[in-house]
Length: 144
Image (cartoon, rainbow, N blue to C red):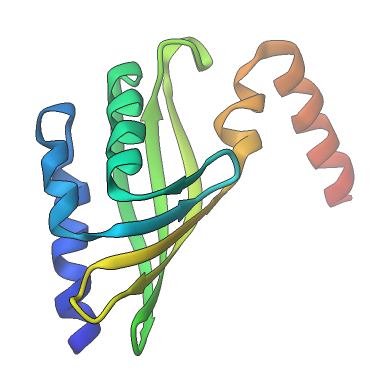
């Protein structure tokens, strides 16, 4: 129950996040936040805010749909779908990327560690015509 009280503001902020309200990140993240995904390793709230400012300036749309939440003590694992539209990927069409987000909350109820796991191939590589065809072919072959 305690974890859901911590997760609720986190979910609310990200569901409403835009370029115009990035200051709301401070409501849910520790000043010493550690963020990592397949491409980025970010330390500190200021750097995280800069990262999201760059992201929201370049994408046409971003939407998260939570599909499952597992929580224990100060840790949570969130399964989610990311719908992303970027003018340089897939001719600006919406890309759906499944992923998982691992969160650790500090004693103040703010996220101090965040790690995002996602299929970078589905998000980026498969969006390029020749490379995407090759990756999809390889995935089919591996699945045989």
